[in-house]
Length: 80
Picture 1 (cartoon, helix red, strand yellow):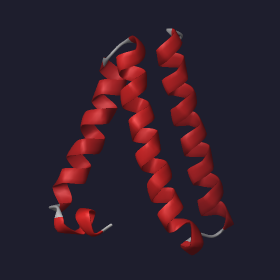
Picture 2 (tube, rainbow, N blue to C red; picture 1 turned 120 degrees about the horizontal axis):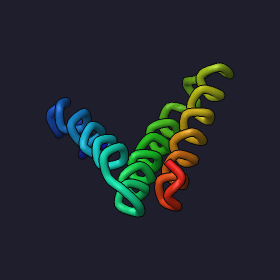
Picture 3 (cartoon, rainbow, N blue to C red; picture 1 turned 90 degrees about the horizontal axis):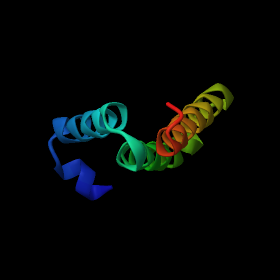
Picture 4 (cartoon, rainbow, N blue to C red; picture 1 turned 135 degrees about the vertical axis):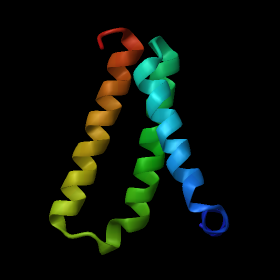
């Protein structure tokens, strides 16, 4: 947590954008790996914010994670 606080704010945004581009433009397991790393980061941030969320916020994060992981698995096996 302290490490993220010391970085410039734009670094995290660029990292998320790069992982998303790799996941969308790549193919096969490279794309799936990019999306899964993005899903892990999203899950970590959801875990950190979990106590402060209400029910709808929790459901939204679970659905977003499920969609991202499902899309990553689809990219990995060549369906999307």
